[in-house]
Image 1 (cartoon, rainbow, N blue to C red):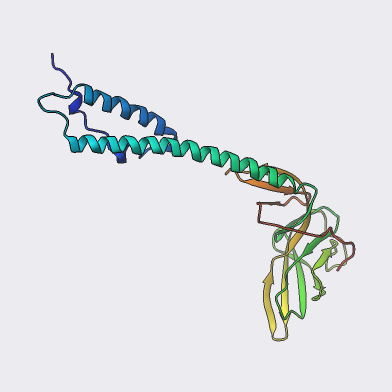
Image 2 (cartoon, rainbow, N blue to C red):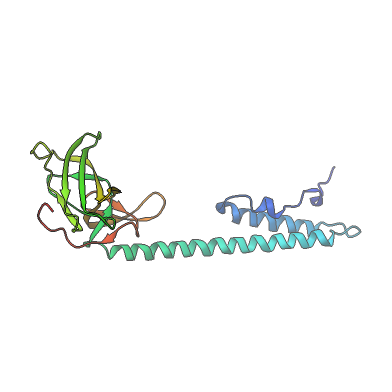
Length: 226
C-alpha cells in the first residue's frame, strides 16, 4: 500500500490563503491549521521540516489569524457606523431641505426651489421642459433672490398637467451668460431608507432622495411666484 506523505502536499502560502473573499477566510484559516498540524505530526525525524519553511508557515498562520480578527472587527465597525448613520438621518424626518435636481415631479402644486447664482448675476432665466425635452416655459427670476417657485404655468398661459419635468437656470451678467445653475428643490424629509449598497438615503415629499451630504437645510417654501 502506498502511503501518502502529508509533506508531499504543497504548503499553503499566504498568497493562496488570502486570495479568497472575506467569506472564505475562516474556512481557509481552519484548513491551514489542519495542514500545518499534519505536517508537524508526520514529519520525518531524520529529515525534519526545514526551519525556514516552518517559520514562513507560522508567519502565514499569524497573517491569517490577524486577517480573521480584522474582518470581524471591520464588520462590527461597519454595522455600528450604519446604525449611527441611521440614527442621525432619522433626525431629519420632518425637516425642510433643498435637494439639487434638474428633474422634478409636478403634482399640480407650485414647485419651490432655490439656487446659488454666481457673483455678477444681473438676471436669471428659468427654463422648464417636458420629459422629452420640449421647452414649455421660460420665466425671469429676480437676480437678488435665492428662493422662487414655478406654479406650473406654461408659456401658452395654461397650467402644465401633472408629470415629470426638467428645470434649468441660466445666469446672465453684464457680458452675457455666466453659465447654467442646477436648482435645489425645496422638500420635506418624510422617511429614511437604505439603498442597494447599504447607504442611508433620505426620502422626501417631492419624490427626490438624497444621501447624507447631498442636501442642505432650507427654510420652508414661501408662497408666490418669485
